[in-house]
Length: 144
Image (cartoon, rainbow, N blue to C red):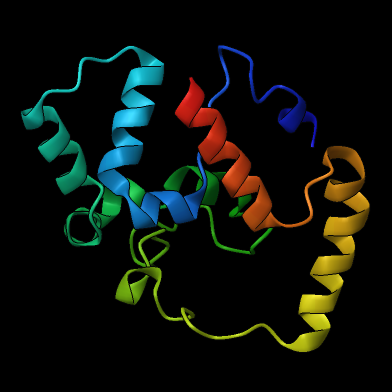
């Protein structure tokens, strides 16, 4: 919640994952404006194409965990002479990360998260829910 306090700072831009999923082009324009990057139609098309699941799946090595893997291989018990690449550790999920879409969390988990939100976020920000936070961000972006 410390970052919420900085949401209006000129060097902070909050972006919600769901907003990227719902309106990638609009969010890319928002990010470009924040970074003071001139956004042409050609550049936008390139960014959108390279942000697509299809692109990431074709270039999975660019989105893998080789750096992290190298740092934790000993903890994982993987021999030092093992060459990275034999095991799939890509961040690009099969199905484009949609495998859990539409599924509800178990009630116990939902209750735990709601309780955690109330104690950790609402108490410090006054925001009743994650959706309220997204709405507040949308209002902030509309005025900046």
